[in-house]
Length: 279
Image (spheres, rainbow, N blue to C red):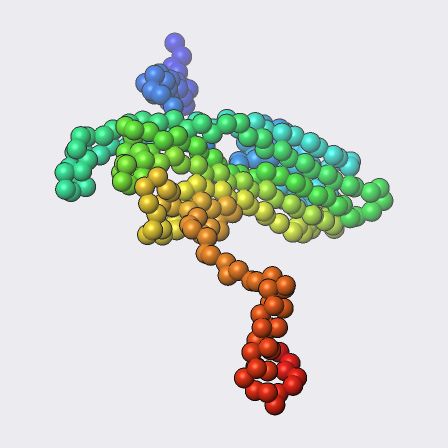
């Protein structure tokens, strides 16, 4: 009778333990959060999980991860891709009664509010030109590399989203949106069959919109019904809308002409010697 090999027995035990651990972890819910930066660009690069540092599968992935690898592509390529992002986010807060002092709030407040973020597009464009009989390869990439957006409506039960003072304890509705785009002009030089040198200029463009602008100091003169936080766009705080200063009225020209004529006549009457007065 033959005995089982020790290595085969060890493999069976390891497989059994891994199977049991998988069954134990399977019923648990999986939780994740969308991040600021994208893990890849283009459908081909995303299908590989963004792993394209040394494996140039397409134009977009090579331009995004390693500019030198565009020279290893077999031919010139032009790639267009688009991703659809539908973010889902919730905001929860709780405020016990009397926690702010002076009996405020009168009752405990607690709420959970979902964000109406909408739908966003993340385009990716990769262009690689590989001329024949030339060691040089040129490329241009245009990518949406990241961003986020939240849009929480006002709430009477959620303390953070409750109306601003004196009608509530929060900041009212919250809206924030960040968009990041990248332009990458690239060039690659083939030195040998296994060595490529590349250079790329990474040009990033961002756009930030937020309402209210919580990083700005509240306006001390804001009255009831007015926003105590000014709005902002692209990170630049705006002045709080207040009463416009009164402009000084400038008399019309005919009125100035009449006033000069009366002044000239008064000077001639008071000083008979003066015949000509220029005003």
